[in-house]
Length: 324
Ligand code: DAH
Image (cartoon, rainbow, N blue to C red; front, side, top):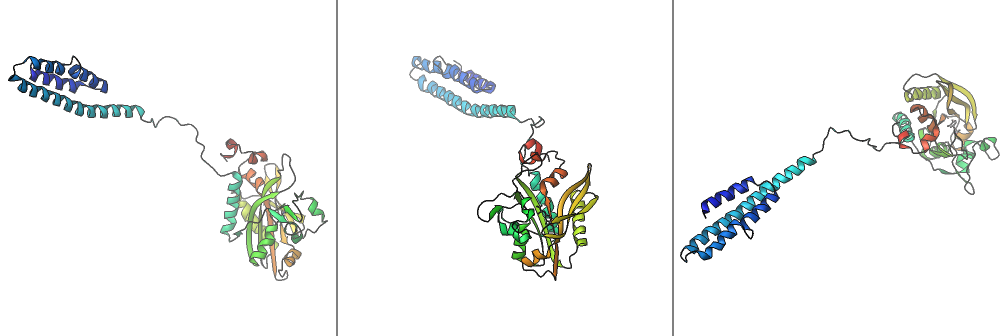
């Protein structure tokens, strides 16, 4: 057997090998039971005593060469196979993707944020009061004593002695006066509750209350503040109307309407803080006066996001509220 030829053949075979399978075949071809190198080793016994070590050495060299070739080819083939695998797995960035639902804020939250940041920039403090409120703050301190007809209009959820779920955010007016004294400017967003449920009313809804108390505050100040706010909120100059109304805690009181596609739309209640409310809170009503306003967030969100049915805001259908 020509060992030099065998070496050449071996090298050529390894160079041509392209996969782990090819390598396996080469192992069989050279070192298997009937492999070429195995056959060579078998011939050793038939050689002359003196030739044996020489040929044996050469066979060993071939075996070593074989092992070296296996090593280097394995590395080459592994890399090649890995590259192949990776190239098959590449992501086609041009493929269209399905709709991704990123988290988003609820239209109610966005509306509260929008209103609060507007007033906050004007120096109003953002205040929150408790949802479980006492009759005193929810009614008495707001000039709605027991047996006052206005109490009936609130459809109150009573809890137990003297406690209730607040029916409006107005009690935060009193709590803030007690906390900060006057002069003060506050805006109070929050949940309110009324035992009322039909297509346009939900037992829980959101309001924002505003209160400003200082010396020489008048109804003109209130009108300007609210008209500026509404023009900002709806991002256009609106027709706004102040319609005389009644709230026990304001005098005079008004309801604010804006001109909508379908005519005048009531948007909030407001008025000059009743002197009795100021006095009850320990404020000198001869020195200080103030205005207050309260608006329903759901209605504002509905208008801002063109939501037709208010119930959409409470049903957590992502398709409806996430695009808003
Ligand atoms: N609290 C009233 C309600 O829930 C709304 C309101 C009216 C708030 C006039 C005010 C106000 O601050 O001045 O119906």
